[in-house]
Image 1 (cartoon, rainbow, N blue to C red):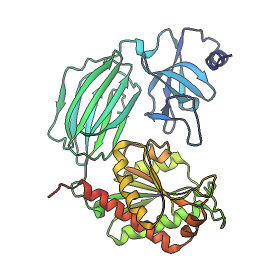
Image 2 (spheres, helix red, strand yellow):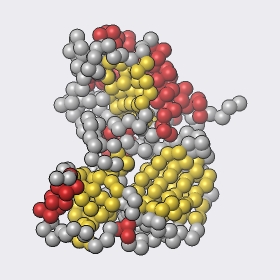
Image 3 (cartoon, rainbow, N blue to C red):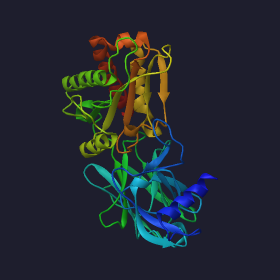
Image 4 (cartoon, one colour):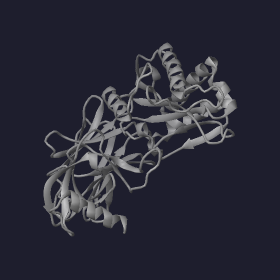
Length: 396
């Protein structure tokens, strides 16, 4: 029996009134609901399309184990965890995408720290955001709607957004383009207003002064509490303890350098889930995040340092730190993109995951045990951030 057939039978069991050719409406709920491309899974979870706001309206068309398959538009589908959806108790004969939902007009403006693009809608529909380069743009697709947008109003208070326009790229996919003035992406966030009639895209501006002392920097010491992480191949040390030691050295170095605003997701052996960390970071709203981990592999010959990013607009930070880390005499394991790590998921701020070295490699492990190495790693991360900032400054 095909998995889709099994999924349909599960829907019949869950909702006795459900009939083939009909659909159920649902709304997103809970912390950080997200869409996935398919039902594939690994230790990092399924490949994510992106996060959604709460109370977003979707159409369920099938059921697969712990996920519902939802129809975003005529040609686009996604998978959302069942725990992230609340059924509306309403069976319809056509998906949302087949109903005539129209967009309204667009407004572009700014406040003291950010620029905003607002799009008028009649309900909360699913969306996805993307970063593009050369030139730098944020692109947002809104699914299941058709354009009735007849003007875009842009105010002088918008400082980072140079141009905004839209295309109806498919009959029921509305795309908004937001062109930025600076090459570096500093982050964006997408959410609906409290009424749900406006989709708001917040664009973070490049800081007026590119000085590390002026930034709000967040540091995440990987693992902690019940999650011990990797174990040393000979010493049996726990990753959670040594990521905290390195994170503390980075905090001290930043403070000594004059950075006034530093946030640590944990300062002791605390159990923190990924949603809890993301919520804390969202509230703090840093200019950048560095997450520190120690790597492990099945073979003790695998060695080296590496940095990770998910979104292409944040890659420059990860490359700048990797370049500095390599001066420690570590082998290069690489710069890894499209990485499905939870803390790499938010688009709100540039972020980088630093896998310092391999606990499973005897040579790397010996370095990791040294307090002098912890200070050296902190220095290289610090210098990598400075290099990245300097690269954003206009050339004389």
